[in-house]
Amino acid sequence: MPNSWFESVAVAQRRAKRLLPRSVYKALVAGTERGQTLDDNEAAFRELGVKPLTAGQPAERAMATEVMGQPLSMPVMISPTGVQAVHPDGEVAVARAAAARGIAMGLSSFASKPIEEVIAANPQTFFQIYWAGDRDSMAARLDRAKANGAVGLIVTLDWSFVHSRDWGSPDIPQDMSLRTMAKHAPEVAVKPLWLWEWVRTGALPGLGVPNFVQPGERVPGFFEAYGTWMGTPPPTWDDIAWLREQWGGEFMVKGIMRVDEAKRAVDAGATAISVSNHGGNNLDGTPSPMRVLPGIAAAVGDQVDVVMDGGIRRGSDVVKALALGAKATMIGRAYLWGLAANGQAGVENVLDILRMGIDSAMLGLGRSSIDDLSPDDLLIPDNFER
Ligand SMILES: Cc1cc2nc3c(=O)[nH]c(=O)nc-3n(C[C@H](O)[C@H](O)[C@H](O)COP(=O)(O)O)c2cc1C
Image (cartoon, rainbow, N blue to C red):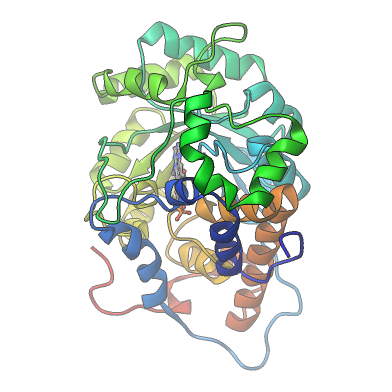
């Protein structure tokens, strides 16, 4: 029953696994090397207990907040991901769901839909870029985002081009040529509902990255753009300060895992940082962001919005992150599972699960506002922090 409501992100993930072609599902699971970081992102939440009250809880709980000047109905935002081939409506479906639930969205520069369509669906859109290509091409990407009304920029810095995983990598094609279709036909044939979604819209996954270039220019394939990025020398903090100058507005540095770098990001002009390890897709052995969040929030939380992402699967995870100092959280796979399971409605379903979970956790902890959450609400094992 792919179109009915699901009760947890875990159920959405199981549906995604059932519905998606194997290589698309594997690309969403991703992770690198032995998967130590991927595992720790969820394990860290599992290690944290809570201290519930049993009487005298507040009848109402407030969870609205503001990040990068954007009002959010709850402390959750959509983290940027390229969602090629998951669903024909791609990031537009995600944007509609986020707008319907009153939250902001990060749009990846490797996304499958043009920024114009995404911002039309959700004006609370931040554009995300990597340090890829020369300064002129990056400035042009920024100009396009600005001209279309992006409300902030996210620059993602944590990527080391690690491409191996012990459980094997998916075979991701460069485009949807006849040869590619023939090659992937066996795995697609056993996923008729996924195929039907695409046939219904009269298109097949394009696997292009339209936000990498200017409107009207030839859209590069995913690996072509990836090659440009790989061939670009990594940025210095001066480069990041230049990028921030070019942008001029709200500016998040995503991928910070160390206190010294959080301070460098603030010095470079960031207005927000995301404590993040790219969902376990970067250097394996990096701990969960939750283990370094308290130190980073203590160091720079009074100067910039500190957000975390990685491993959020339920509302109580969000509450734990806030208790350790995050202003809000961002989600990746959770909404991708929802998108795969049921398009826009599936993403709304995931956001509703998180909202209900945050509310239940606050009720249980006896907190009437997310502003009152603190480490005192948690049972934190020795050696939790790194
Ligand atoms: C399939 C996939 C694609 C991603 N693509 C991007 C991207 O294009 N830009 C980016 O900044 N982060 C990207 N990320 C990282 C997410 O923004 C986010 O940091 C991560 O997914 C959070 O962990 P979670 O999936 O456990 O919630 C991607 C993650 C996944 C799983």
